[in-house]
Length: 599
Image (cartoon, rainbow, N blue to C red; front, side, top):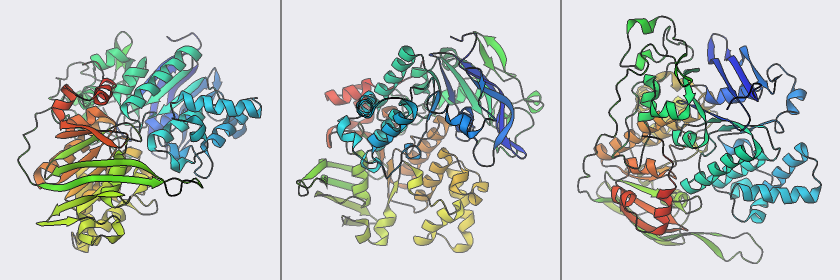
């Protein structure tokens, strides 16, 4: 529904710098209670577009044309004072990384109360009650306890929910969502989307949602725009775009989505998006399109209407054949184990004066093995112990009981509790890829230096070949050699994650621990990363433990799946069998919460 005077109106918006465009002639409107979704690969300009709707520009960028109007009032070119009165109360942003919205030195409740003080006239007692209401609204357990905690005391999913609660404090009319469900398990994700849908209907708040997860957009949005290299190349009603994608890029994007019924990782889109500094003269997707023709290399095609307000910027709309998806995975060959975890328990001491000696158990007597060439999936809600298990295996969290055994290079070794006590060979053998790439990438080092460090440390290649080997690693994660000379801050979130993955692969490990590594990636890059990890495991006999809250993603890559609940494994089975016929009630509930899009 689009009223005569839209709540938010974007017309021919252009954002860029000297000689390049990050957002190119983007137009759309949303009305009260309407939600518009934006999909596309990393680096397509989605997050830059969201920031510009707030009147914010990243360093080096400026408005080069077009307009953004909120209830008829311009958002671009306004003073900081004018925008400060609008941000939070009229329009609010929920960032992809909650760490950018929360002060690590202040309690969660205090920060939400500060937002209420800025945007409401509530008295102190009413503000305190409203803080608890907001924390309950986003399903944070024990709101009174959560309000007293600092950000580092919350899990990734809990931290995201706290950031959402703070964004809702000002009761904004338009909510901008940048990957709002990043880091959330499937049941919490479903509950959060239900909350946002209810908020739309009850408060008539308009929403612009950026997400690499088309399942999220399918659940939340009325219309969708697909961005590629800064421009919207397809736009229309969500059901029409997903059920009948017309642009070859959109078709490939939809085909990249993992499903519970999939066998093996989905097919990634071949090639890489073009550099914003050197865009093709014609259709920007032409270098990657199997249906390219001479006419595509002239002027970029304009968005033209097909039917039902469905618009496509393609000369051969709806003519591309459906790509082959879900190629079958060869049966896993019988192999010896690379890792054995036996009755592993991990606990953390409480901080109260009277309970210093009482550990709080996070993982309780967990046992499993990982074979060479096998991918074991770990799934469960936030706080179930998934990441803690990985940290214990990596030597970053000391177990309170149990044993972790590594079988590598013909040797069987019990891993020391702490990584600092492990020899270099064991450190090389076990590599952990973090959920947030900022946790492993030094912001002051260029990508070449980041990749060179493990290559030098583990003696993989001579110094004279460092650049060549680093470029090869980037190629495996679908990044060009020009990335070597960039700083992490010059990369998108998805690009930084791919650098972190390449850095882990540089060690040539025997075991890879993947902690929600595809959470911030768009579906095409996600498919490429899943394919890369699977191929690495198969071809080089590398074991992998893949943690994710997304069961469809785990199903697409894992040979077996272990379901965690409250620190214990409640079910472990072949991936296909578990997803088709789960036995435990908890696994049944998890699978029932998985989002899907129309086939």
